[in-house]
Length: 164
Ligand SMILES: [Fe+2]
Ligand SMILES: [Fe+2]
Image (cartoon, rainbow, N blue to C red; front, side, top):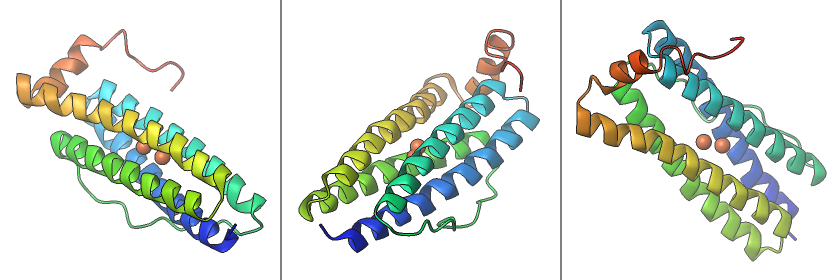
């Protein structure tokens, strides 16, 4: 097993997860400020799941005797238009799923089954995240750009976050 190759792939994923966490929290704050609560809550929930990914990746790096590189892959993009946010988030998730599929394949090629398995689990999660954003894009297409505001009115009581 080539530990250094695995550590490099895992740290690249850590950088992507950190960037997603920062970006999603930024969007959570802005969407909450705009009164688009269900979408704001979705971004907070997704950011928490990305933190779970970050932990799993960091644990694996340390198990392989590497060090965790805690630098995000890039700066937060100042996108605040709700439709643009959802479009960008869907693209980020789709890219993550592709990257982790590649990483799983590479880990398999150098006989690191546990890292391969971890990346495969992450692929399934990122595809689920993609689906949540992509479904909203479909709804915007079907019902118009006001869909996100309508969703907000409809879920005003039912979806309100507890103990925020
Ligand atoms: Fe993730
Ligand atoms: Fe994700």
